[in-house]
Image 1 (cartoon, one colour):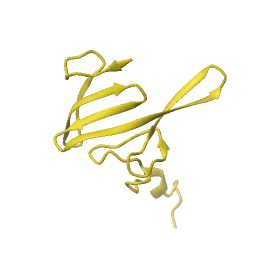
Image 2 (cartoon, rainbow, N blue to C red):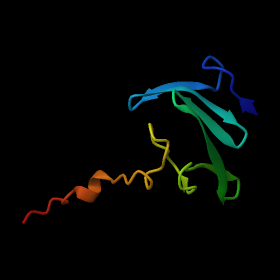
Image 3 (cartoon, one colour):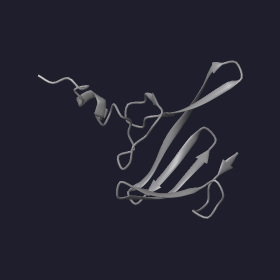
Length: 97
């Protein structure tokens, strides 16, 4: 089912995060179209079936083409492309010298 016309259509979200206003977020079959002030970006959706009867959706990063669970604003890229780290990677786990 294709859903998208404007920000008032059910299934179309208007969001603002990281200082970026997303005009619309629309699902067109196997892709999501994100519209921002700088233009439109298509993000493909990938399905897998880890267990019979269970379907899981992933995003395909527009930059590196890897599947991922999250796409980050405002760059619309995955954690790997943005070289993001987890806070725990810098935690000393209570160890002191």
